[in-house]
Image 1 (cartoon, rainbow, N blue to C red):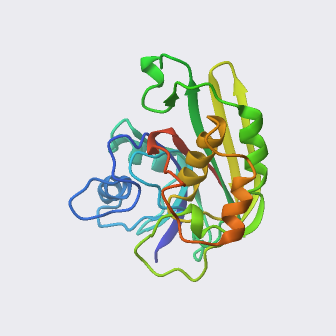
Image 2 (spheres, rainbow, N blue to C red):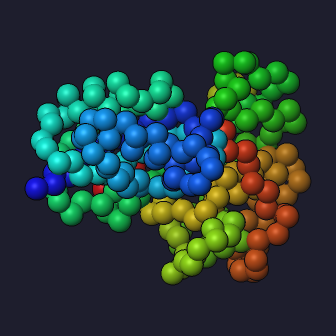
Length: 247
């Protein structure tokens, strides 16, 4: 009888082509499944709560999988981590219901995007923070962020996922932009996100912060429901973290 486990995963996405396995590229899912095969002594399929893009990081990614035999969770975490590279770590594990699904059961997710607004980006922050030299108007960014809150069709702020979607409507619960010295952090919570939606929203808020767009332009673009244009840039993946998934 198979036993289902869920894990909380953290990873540095710098050298990965995203979470999901894909031909010709190294992914977090692939590396995790290879580690679990050692532990389970047979192949294991891991199902993730999200499909993070290339270069995107995670602090609170959730996944589930089935094992052929029972393993105490403390021992399971230790065993998986022993076969993982140092840029991927299982932070915790729990035995769960046989029908638990890390993606379908998720009630919401929080992403954070990190900007460093100064002339020089410290080297130790370079893999995780995006450097912006021009002075940023954080108040304008916060005003713009509020227009994203609520249920909208976010197709103008997403990329083509090259797969069929039942809907491009999503609900944003909260979106804040805060500044502490040169560090600007965008925090967005929602019931789900489209392909590159968070990076697109962050990219547009950067344009607002630099004075290239007005905060009200967010509402204008959402209301127009036109296909995405070059007006909405995609912010670099390295500044994005999947921070938390809740159930």
